[in-house]
Image (cartoon, rainbow, N blue to C red; front, side, top):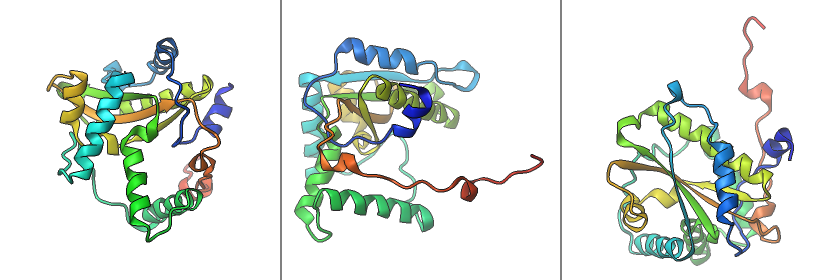
Length: 222
């Protein structure tokens, strides 16, 4: 797929076919993505690729943590909830998704099940966890990991795959470390669901709006 088309067509996929992605295809995605920029070429990212019984165990354990109301303690602060226009955009997306998924505002059980699906990487057959070393986990490293996450998402589109970048799956980093054998010296930054999109899944039909360029840009001396 041509790059601009991939950039325009990329979207968060929240429903997947059950077919696992071949290891060779996942490696190809990462081989393309690893060319992302990083400050002074530090390349502060590490990938933990999950599937099969290991991913099933992680999904189950994360779900149990959430249901038992275990206090989250991610390796990086979540920040303050968005307000103003940022909150409005968030609400707009939530309303669109819930309408497509037939989840009423006051239906607490359906809302809970939707959150649990999020925690299960939207039931994707594979997942990517991106970690960084404690020695380089400054704001520039996080910026670089954002760049490589976008590269992964675009490379996935090119190979007929879909992704969803998720923060909720890294709320309990000790679970990921234990199940995937990750040392304490690594901080868990973000998770990504990855797989073949189920285009009949209602939430995958969501269309998000983007601010016009004029609302986001100021020009000086140009």
